[in-house]
Image 1 (cartoon, rainbow, N blue to C red):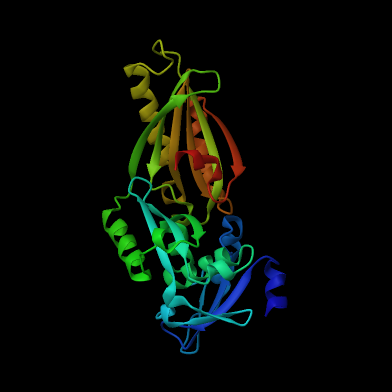
Image 2 (image 1 turned 135 degrees about the horizontal axis):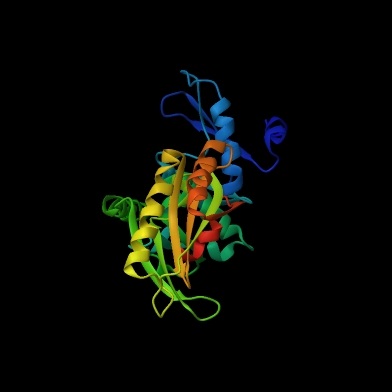
Amino acid sequence: MTQQLANVHPDLAWDTGRGHRSDHLLVVSAEGDAALRRVAAQWLRAAPSADEVWDFASARQPVPGVTENVLDINGTKFPLRDIRFGLNAHDQRECIDLEVYHPLFGQMLGDEPLRVSFLFLDWLLGEDGVERWVGAINTTTSADVATATATDLIEAINRLTTQTQPDQWAFLQGTTSAGERMVVMARRPLRWIDYPLFDLHTEVSLTYTDQREDGLPTETALNRLRQIEDDITAAPGPRGILLAHETATGTRVLHYYTDSDDQNGHAAIEAAARPVGAATAQALDPGWKDLRQYS
């Protein structure tokens, strides 16, 4: 199986488990690599339909009853039910930073505690659940800072889920490298895992001459920019998404993401930008790293 999967991509991982609608589940995982997630998704598209025996997935799925399992790590029994968490929820970012503790972490070498933590979280929440809801992950040998159980973690994520409001926007401001004022509007939540195939970043740069003393647009210029933005955003439809825009010193930059395999998506953005004299630039950016400072 490993040799066969290497023909798809050598860095993909695979796993099997109990299926939810079939006897068995075969998972091909990108191991958290946003660039490889598209390859795993393409593999899943080519998979046969699920039947009574086999089902397929492009990310590890939650494992029911995982806390009752015991790992054997170099001959040491590692009961997963003893794992505890320190929870630090960020409502605006809609994620939870974790401190992970187990009584045996102090006996483990190197990055073994962190690898066990990632593995357990994948089993508990599913690979996509970890990417979607978990922020920073650190390990600790202090039981005092990590008292929450796996059930507590799931309940905390469920609370975040019920509070999530799609298509919200955050207003940010700062300065450019030259010290000029800049304002930014960024979509919340800003999570690539919600659009794992949208890996092509298209920047659309709009200029305006009617500006205030601080370099931001006047009301007249702002209304024009908003209308242009609405028109360009509507052009790709569900094939693309606007994630943020930056405005400073006579320029507004719109940040769109589309599927790099779908030429109609970014072509529609370019076609809508061309008549208004906007400049466009494109770069592959799986994982939306270009916008990480706004997340």
